[in-house]
Length: 319
Image (tube, rainbow, N blue to C red; front, side):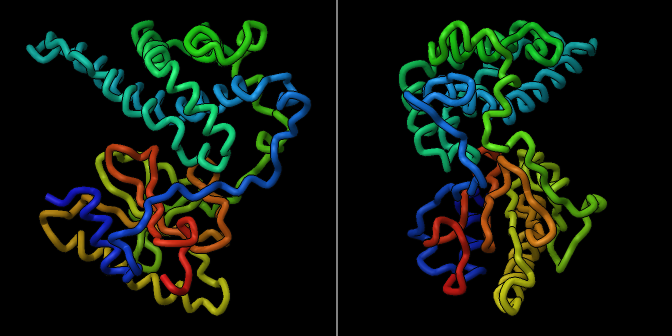
């Protein structure tokens, strides 16, 4: 049965990407319109030193992916335990731990942190020294019944548990605040708005590919962890449209190739988002002004693979 790497190779063959089998798999940098203003000692408007700010960004990034994944497991477990058959009495060891380890291990390489070199470096420093403690914080959260976070009406503080107790990245005074209090750091991200075309019905196709808009990107491209998804960020009218006109039939052929084989049917979804009419927000948007192909692999949707052998993942006419 084809692996994710095999599927990626098949995609490369059909698209004719040069040097594809020896290509470097990269995370495309997000282009942020404005930078967070920093002051003496690298502190931001809240007085957070670089390590504390990095911890907050890492936890927010982790929580956007890991917490929903853990809640899905918890919901399934709650349903199982509510039954009266033998399965309801079965003890599942390591059910949450495997998922926590997978997400924490790739915390510093997620798409929304990749463009922040200093944050990424500080994240690696934190994880090298305290990865076990971070794993423990998420495990404690699960054992406590997944309580609501402070700032959302709950008593659990991710800032205190991870950035103070687990890693000592933030001082006690900064760690006493809810993470949401640090959202508006002067970069403008808190006020940034994103365009989206109306969300189409599930399964709607555009030009032979699944139609994806900013408002449906997560549901179509990321939500199903069992399926590899290939996202084409398109600029149909860029230039004379020749590039898009050449690439689209190749992508349609890729989709037909997998759908036409009973052994691979349902294992790969290929979607297209019109970037001229949609601003796909972070962590899934690339901020690019050029066509982009990105594979979200099954079982590891938090670590997308940009497909190109040059240009940091951006497709060129040469590709």
